[in-house]
Image 1 (cartoon, rainbow, N blue to C red):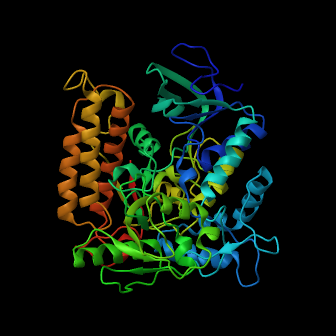
Image 2: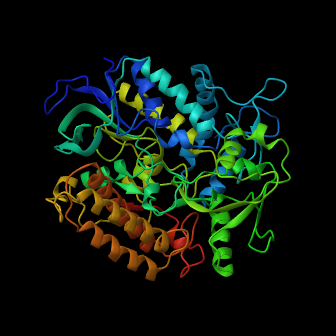
Image 3: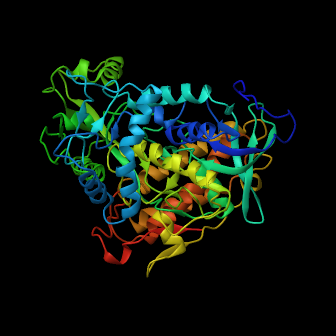
Length: 540
């Protein structure tokens, strides 16, 4: 049942045929799920609003963290490092699943054809990154890990029986009697369609486009999270948006990423005066926070990464070297301008350890999900691993007849909330179709959308970025509400803006409720961590 790009396997009318499993998104989580489902004989469809290979996975320069050998390392140590980065909010069982099942999933990926870097003896080359106590991160092409993983998975999916819809935009979930029965979508030609499925898997990635400076592709607009919120499924941990500390300070967007591996191999951070000011191997949240504060103190918009002491830079990091040459920089001779950029959303649609959400028939995996693995801050190179580990568990649960969540993983916060758990509800979370109209300026709706999107991104960066306060959050909440009230011409741009507004509202609401600083969430008016907030903030 293969389909050409932009085509569906069903009839060209308002509805398509029903599937066993419909997967939204074509990153590591979505494609891994598709491969597993097809191998079990399920009728599978994969829908992506871009091309199959255009996902955040492709842009991932970091590697995959897994204990693949070495007497000094252990899964218990990987678990401890993950818990440490998560700053008290990781679910222990979820992290144990990640570190114990991770090595086998990496081997499966190698079997599919993914080629990781090797040492002189032919073994996998292992690197250490921020927050890790041991070298346990595998890379491909130095800093092209995501592209290599995406290549291997795309090839495998195209060889399966999965139908592929490229250029289709899922707009909302189809819900009947509290169960998800598929999605509403826009075809590439702008016409509407409904795709029915017994099970729908949300794997559309994150929401880096909430911010003006991001390492995420343009498509990362929080679509799955927004759809889940509108449908009433639980979402959590969205206040924990991780900013990568070493994005290249350059007009290119998404921002070129100077991989954590550079610091792992000895590159150092310097301020405007050329002084080192932070331990480069601290978890990302602490490095980004230190950088943002130093930039404010010195009145500058970027700092420096000094990689001049690294040997064989071009050979060890060919992808980064090529991108630097494109903008006229030589890492062997000059410091590299850097600034924090929005990188990864640690929260998302709440799931149990098998990816089940609070809604029957609806599942989530990858960055769109909140499994409980990352807590308040993701450990470097655990993101690709999470998608590789938890998406197969979704398919296995479906195969075994699961039809609802269990009180495991992050889902404990919903089904068995701890004392003092915070549950928020959001206003104006109407279905997207009810939030677009005739357009304020007929024929110019696209221009309006771009201006409003830019306005939202700038406001979120200024007032809900690395550092926040009650005053700044109230200010951005008002601006986001104004943007959300605009009447826009229907279309993909308006839909993405609607989704960004919905996710921004969730992030702001959770950030206002969490009156402390923890992990990737830093409040200048509440600079210390508080035991009163050692739980998830759930949005229903």
